[in-house]
Amino acid sequence: MKIGELARRSGLSTYTIRYYERIGLLPRADRDRSGQRDYDASILTWIEFLDRLKATGMPIREMLRYAALRERGAGTEAERGALLERHRERVRAHMAELEACLLVLDTKIAGYAGKEQRKDDHDAPIPERLRKPAGPRQAGAR
Amino acid sequence: MKIGELARRSGLSTYTIRYYERIGLLPRADRDRSGQRDYDASILTWIEFLDRLKATGMPIREMLRYAALRERGAGTEAERGALLERHRERVRAHMAELEACLLVLDTKIAGYAGKEQRKDDHDAPIPERLRKPAGPRQAGAR
DNA sequence: CTACCGGCTAGAGCGCACTCTAAGTCAACC
DNA sequence: GGTTGACTTAGAGTGCGCTCTAGCCGGTAG
Image (cartoon, rainbow over all chains, first blue to last red; front, side, top):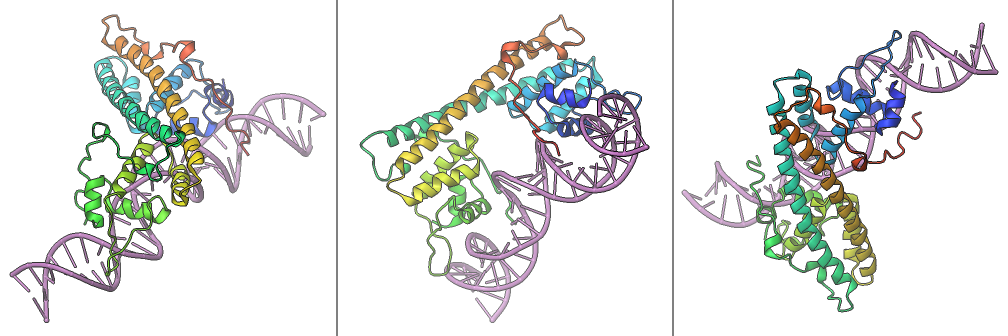
């Protein structure tokens, strides 16, 4: 399979496929005698998995760590598993936050839908239990 | 309240607060006689709401549309409501996708945890029902 | 033979959301 | 009166994840 077909089948652009190879997210592809990339269908499975990691917000930097472990092969399973477990927890936390935000959104929308529009309802306070604790920021601004 | 205190209380940096004002996400702040921004506590409620929109992945471009409607005030409620409803649907869809990805992640992690490690389990196929339909891409690459 | 398509590389450019710098002002404290 | 520190502005810089350009090469159809 050449890069164009892989692009169609994976949903990535050819640009992105080459970019992923450049940075090491995809293994260096085999080439035919004229130097063109020639892919095995199995690469699709890996790309699909990368898509899942991306969809769940994993930064490329971390996918690279996973990809590097995968390349190293046997002996890295524990580390790969741990990496995915940490990621899973972050995803779960993110989903919980989204859930809370949905509640806020629902309340707001209900406000707009109701006849009893308060003129200032965009300033309706958010219940304390839904607020994020404001972490430390701008540690040394100069 | 001056910008530094607002920064501490909102969790945004002073840079970000000025940036938000510059682009119109925050209303132009009142100034004291020496030209410094002087905020009313009510701005915190608006910032908290913006944080919710941001947390749910709304791009600034769209928050701006909402902010502009809010500035225009009365008569824009229906449009504001519709905007939030569209956003809510996107958030729900995104959560559904995350849920599906979590299943993939769970399967993978279980594979790493199990004693019966298949050497190639990073290539374990993703069940068809969890795959995203690959939308049209790279429409005209030149 | 020529045109065209799809591929190749190196490297530049882009959109987003900040984040920081430089140079200056102002109020309070010693 | 001088220093400190928080503020002001315009504008430059950053990190991320692509996305595209330029210039070239090779295989195939007319």
